Length: 475
Ligand SMILES: Cc1cc2nc3c(=O)[nH]c(=O)nc-3n(C[C@H](O)[C@H](O)[C@H](O)COP(=O)(O)OP(=O)(O)OC[C@H]3O[C@@H](n4cnc5c(N)ncnc54)[C@H](O)[C@@H]3O)c2cc1C
Image 1 (cartoon, protein in one colour):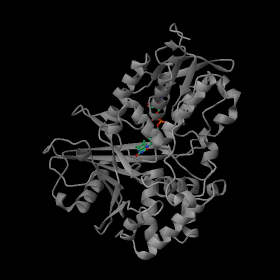
Image 2 (cartoon, protein in one colour):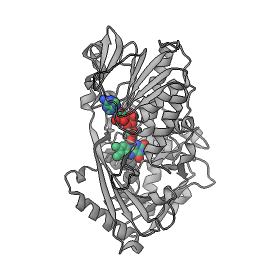
Image 3 (tube, helix red, strand yellow):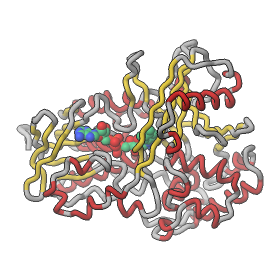
Image 4 (cartoon, protein in one colour):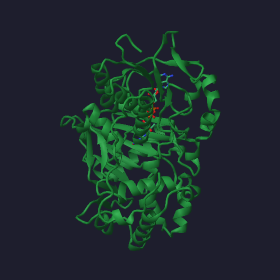
């Protein structure tokens, strides 16, 4: 208890999970200290400082969907909802240069995208029939455990998906949403993506992208929010260990030796780092909680950035079919950069195992070749600056059985709760999963102290015919 008579909490890790937990605690009147080892907040969803220009550059473009309601609630809490731009249509371009969109019509869910689908140029009728059959199967499927025993590639075979339906529809969406190849995606995860984004609600698939660098979204608004409520944010500060007393934590130690005490603690480090700072006494309370962290496989993602002096006519977000790169984002358009300021294109490859060990120049060459082919007007353009950012351990692999390795927020200690997108949120390893985990940890700590929990954040409502067709899942 602080001299102000208020409860004090420390949140370790300033990624989306830590920011969510810290802002909810601050809102509830707790004196919060948020500790982050890097200079800027956002964690894996953040930016680096370009040494040449001094600007903040996102390590990798991030996107969200309207069905990600906990992330949207965080943006509202921080007052930055207007800095996320949602698109009500997804644009794809295939290897033959044909453009297609997925967008809503007047039809009720789950039929709202069916008209755009009927005229989707990159698929033939046979592919569309197989996809419609697959969607119906997803709508009517019961929840686990059976769905978690089979991977999505097996399900493609079982439901007669054509090669083109897989390569030009299912795979591009799933690899982007789950950062994994269909052979390694549990059907529980792949079905969830399609049920939440495409089947339950007309707006679920709307794609949101930041109109500012991620670090600018998260850093200054979070610091202001917490400081306005009496707390503080310490960046460039590394926690080296927590100290235990009986069943709880009484302090933590920073690199440099300083000790910090609080009434409660929330730790949000990545699953491959967290047990380094948790004391053996706490692990001993419930060894089963920590046992399977080493069994969670992590999957890489790669971002390729190219700056051109020319203005390039490219939509803000373009999904590439039949290519090595998966998305092109026109950050100059998204950031509303000044006219004639050139163009900053950012490309993304999810589940990018094939690029580990490939030299940067070769990756840039591939990216540039694909830009030249997809946007033929750029054929003579060469970038003035390039960057390749590889995250070898970006997100967890949503393989069958992985949810059994993902523990909840309560590790059994009196005053310590755990968050992070890898905990058992029921969601893939995304910013939404991180926001949900931060919400769960803050709720658990507040409830343990006898405070009212934060207001519930509902999912998008199930609407239209989906109210009758979508079989409810128990989790
Ligand atoms: C390249 C890439 C692209 C992605 N694309 C998307 C996307 O498009 N959409 C999407 O929703 N998700 C995407 N993700 C996933 C998303 O970024 C993560 O799931 C989410 O940000 C994880 O948040 P977190 O708070 O749980 O963890 P983290 O962001 O990892 O936060 C943990 C924080 O703890 C800090 N920390 C670590 N050790 C210490 C210590 N000892 N002391 C103090 N602080 C410490 C770290 O610096 C970090 O800031 C992507 C991830 C990557 C890597």
